Image (cartoon, rainbow, N blue to C red; front, side, top):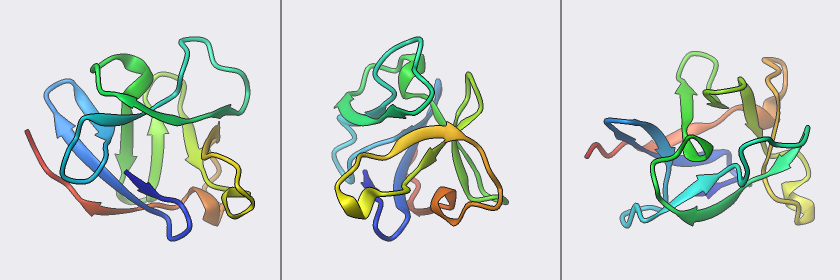
Length: 107
């Protein structure tokens, strides 16, 4: 899935969209957790179900991972302190929102 310390994410592209999945297995997806998220929703891995709470798109130019419905970005500020990655308003200047795709399997 996600190596927040190094800003790496494994993304799998399916017909319904892009999902951040666990490497190789693709049965756990990074999930926003609830349909109506608070301002800084912590993300967790959950069984992949193809729903909108798991749809994350990758902007390869800006290197942002964003939630397609509300245009917030996966942010890893304070992950080194043990906090989960969160969805925060996208900010092109924030290094903690820049991600590199480690692999892009298609199914």
